[in-house]
Image 1 (tube, rainbow, N blue to C red):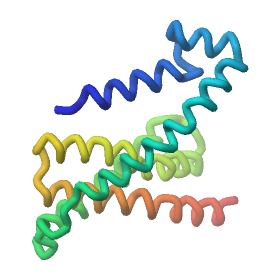
Image 2: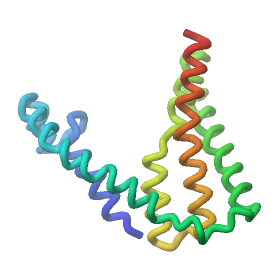
Image 3: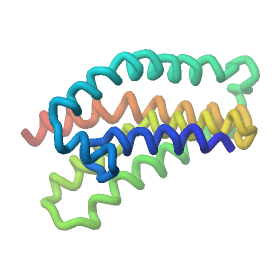
Image 4: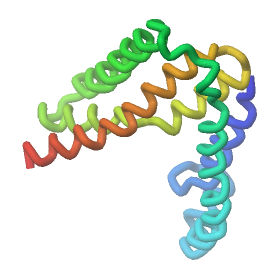
Length: 160
């Protein structure tokens, strides 16, 4: 399913994390100068591969193969958008913090596009998703990524 790349990236992130205990992580905790050096050395790699990933995801979708008149794409996107937003807004109500803080936490969880893009791309490459499903996922990922910061700004300006 293409998961080894995803798991490898996750493992590398854990190994380089300052908050997770691994033998290499111990060296990062013990020597802050070493941690800063590793972070500085990794920055060009991150700057190189991150845009390539997003460009590849964008190029992988052949918009001509999608029937934009299909009610399935729009209904699927609408229902998925509702599920994504409601699911993230309901979660914070399970913790005991002030009501305003719950809304802030829920709204801040909505734009998680990069993770969605990773799984959508893995599903597309593995032929798990049809072009219509993949297009619906991309629509929802784009909308949640673009609209959530606007909602957060309005929320903060109203209650700050």
